[in-house]
Length: 178
Ligand code: ADP
Ligand code: MG
Ligand code: MG
Image (cartoon, rainbow, N blue to C red; front, side, top):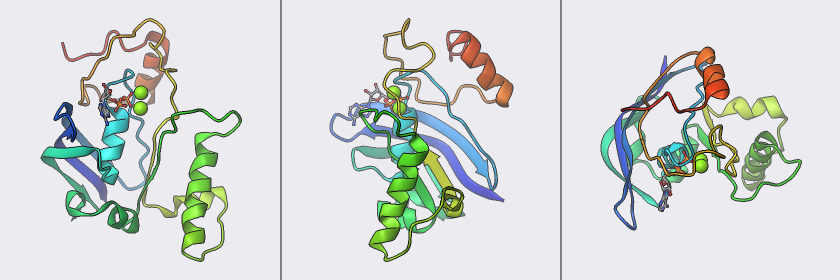
């Protein structure tokens, strides 16, 4: 069953009108794990934030269906109620705190607000779709060599785990639109 269907999604920074997402297409079925990889500045965090309805961005085109419902019409709060969960990238890395611990803390804080007891790690999968944005501080594969901002803002290549391994080995240089 299709869980998330993103079609030609375009989004701009509200304040400046600068286009960041330039036509993102992604379909996620129930039970799948997707890793979106790309150069620093290519729009991965923006994509995550646009999906959860972050106030800094305006969607200017395309569609997003989550469990057959129009996600773009929902308030951020409603999006979490229908089962979309995101852990935000923190600007500062906290030594010893993994993204997963962070997710669990955030999730349990929300449960506490609803008068519910804390859960163990695997139960976090109560969310139908969990978006785990990396806690990055310039640690991308090419970060040291590549300071230039690259805003591709779209998914240019899709593959299985061997593609992820190739990117880890070779970086993003061979992967671009041009
Ligand atoms: P990634 O997560 O792939 O490293 P981001 O989504 O953080 O990339 O950023 C993509 C581009 O959009 C960058 O050039 C970034 O500066 C710009 N950008 C993202 N959010 C904002 C914002 N709120 N205001 C201005 N520019 C932004
Ligand atoms: Mg980044
Ligand atoms: Mg990011």
